[in-house]
Length: 166
Ligand code: FES
Ligand code: FES
Image 1 (cartoon, helix red, strand yellow):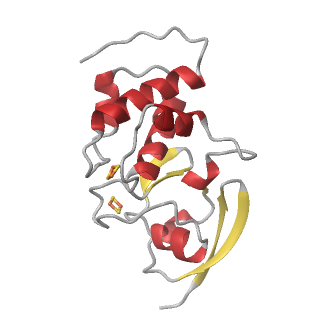
Image 2 (cartoon, rainbow, N blue to C red):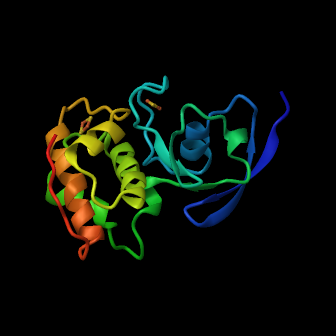
């Protein structure tokens, strides 16, 4: 199979990458761009460890061929912090203990990033629904929910914060 060049913007930087038609986006992100914060768990679209943002939407990058990303803008977990400062979502996960072994964490962070950019003050039920495609083998789900709610307060401090449990 012939390799081709794709043009993508990754964490704000334009890249030209040679890819083969069979290559998955997650493998290109990790092996060709060196962004190993994105993890490979199941490779079958179940675990969410490989979640990145593609043109504003959370995508499991093991379910997408790299050639399908041509012309698109991608944000990985490495793109969250700015000038050495953790993103509020990362701070929230640290402060509320939203991780244990950390294997699922980059995927959780990217799903949280997508959710909180679209929904400022999600309640417990909305968080659970949006994270239904992200598995944590350490089963730290309650702390992850608390981390997402804390991140919402850090990102939107002036918003009215209504806690609704479901
Ligand atoms: S590695 Fe992509 S969903 Fe599990
Ligand atoms: S923190 Fe270990 S898999 Fe989630």
